[in-house]
Length: 149
Image 1: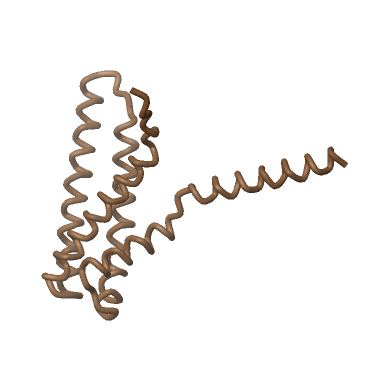
Image 2 (image 1 turned 45 degrees about the horizontal axis):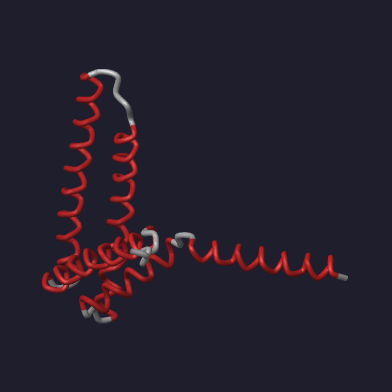
C-alpha cells in the first residue's frame, strides 16, 4: 500500500513540475496578444485604429524577424581570414540598412492607416513593451539576493 501511495505522490509531483515548466516556456501567441494589448492601451487606439494598424504591424514584425535571423547566422560565423570577416561585416551592415528601410516603409504605411500622432504613440509603446519584457527576463534570470552579510 505504501508503494502505491508513494508512486501516486511521485506521479502527481512529476505532473505538477511538468506543468510548471510548460508555464515558463515562451508562447509566441501570448507574447503577441500581450504586446498588442499593451500598445492599444498605451497608444489609446480605438478598435478601428487597432484593426487598421495591427495587420501591418505583424507584417513588419515577420519581415524583421526574418532579417534578424539572417543577422544571427552571420554573427555566429567564425571567419578564418580578413577577407571573410569583411564579407560578414558588409552583409551585416546590408541587413541593418535593409531593416531601417523596411521600418521606414512601414512607418509610412502606418501613417496612411492611422494618424501620425497615433503611429508615434504606437512606436513608443512598442519600445516600452520591449523594455518591460527585458526587465522581466532579467528578473527571472537574476539569482535571488543573499541577505547574509
